[in-house]
Image (cartoon, chains in turn brown, blue):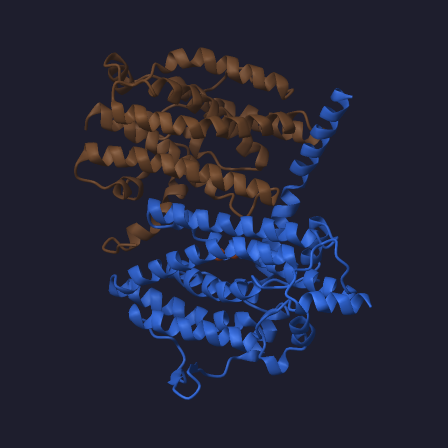
Length: 248
Length: 307
Ligand SMILES: [Fe+2]
Ligand SMILES: [Fe+2]
C-alpha cells in the first residue's frame, strides 16, 4: 500500500465517520431549520468522503470506493477518534465539530497546494464547504457558551471531555512525514500554532475556558479506536455485509 | 355581501390572498388541511430517517439523506404558508403534540427493509404528487404556490424510489423478495392516503365549493392506481390486489375493497407506530428547548450591547 493511498484513505475515513454521526441528527434537530443545516453538513461530508474514497480506490486498483467504506473492519479504519465520538446533546456535537472543523479548515488550506493535483483539487473543493461548517459550529459555540447558564455549563462540559481527542489531530507518523517530504502532504505540527489561535479566539468569544492539556488519546493512525466506532460501522455496513452478492 | 364576492372571486379562479376577506370556515379548513400537510412532511422524515445510517452505498446514503432533508424543507415551507392565516408555528406544533392536529397515517407504518425506501419513494411520494398536482390549483394563493414548488422535488423522489425498487426487483432472489414484501405492505396504506371514499367524506362539500380541493378522494385515488399498475408490471412486481383489473367500459382499473376498519383505527391513533412517531417528535422538541433558549438569550444580550 502506497503512502499516498494510506493518506487519502485516512482523510476519507474521517469524513465518512463524522458524516455518519451528523446524519444521525436527521429528524432530531432543535429546530426544523437546524435539522436542515445538520443534514447539509452531513451531505457535504459524505460528498467529501466519496471524492477521497474514489481516489483511494483508483490508487488501490482492486477495491471500489464502496468496498473501502463498507467492507473494512474497525482496526482497518483510520479516522480521527474525535470524529467517531457520539453526538451526545446538541452542545456535544457543536464542540466536537468545532474542534474538528477548525483542524479541517487549516488542513485543507494547506493540502490545497499539494503537488498531487487530485489531492489538491479534492482539498480545495472540501475547503469551501469546511469554511461554512466552521462558521456554523463557531457561531453555535458562541451562542451556547454565551447564552444561558445551562447552555454554558453543557458546552464547557463537552469541551472538557472532548479535549483529550485533540492531541491526535497534530501527530505525524512515517506516512505523514513521507508525504510532507515529497511536497504532497501537510505539516500537522505547524497547523497546531494556527489552530491554537483560532480555538483561543473563539473560546474567548464564547466565554468558555480552554481545558488544560492532560491525557491525550492516540492510535487512530494504527487503527486504534474508542469503543464507539465498532457500533457505528456495524450499523453502517450491515446491508453490504449481509448480502455480499447484491447490488443496490 | 362579502361572502358573495368571495365566492365570485373563487368561481373566477382568482387566488385568495392572506389579506383578502375570507369566511371563518374557509380559514379553519385551510389551517387544518395545511398544517396536517406540514406535519406529514415532518413526521414523514422518521420512517425514512430510520434507514439513513444503514443505506447500502455512498450514493444511496446521499440520495436518501437529501430526500429526507427535502421533506424537512417542505415542512418548513408549508408551516410558513399556514402562518399567513394568522397562526404561529409554535401553536401548530403544540396542536400536533396535543393530538389535536393529525398527519398522514401512512407514516405510522414501520420501515423494515431497505426496499421500504423504494416503496415509500415510489408509492407514498407518488400518491403525494397526485394529490399535490391537483392542489396546485387550490384557491388559496400561498398554498397553491407552495404546491408548485414542492411538486418538482416530489417527482424527483418518486423516480429515485422507483429506481431502488427496479434495482432490487432485478437483483438477487433475496432482494426481489424484499421488494415484493415492501410493495405488499405499502400498497394498501398508500391508496388509503387519499382518505375515505367520497360517500363517507363529510368535508368534501365546502372544500369543493371553495375550490380548496379540486378533485375528490376517489378521483385522485383512481388516477394514482391507473398510473401505478403499469409501473409495477414493468419491473415484474405484483400489486397485492386480486381484484385489480382493467375495466374497458370505465377506462380505469377496478380494484378491491380497502380495509376501512384499519384505516380509521390508524387515523385514531392505533397504528403500529403512532405513539413512537409522536414521542420521537416530542423528544426532539424537548431536547432542543435549552438550545432554543440559549439562542434567544444570546440574541437578547447582543441586542443590549447594540443599544
Ligand atoms: Fe414532501
Ligand atoms: Fe417527497
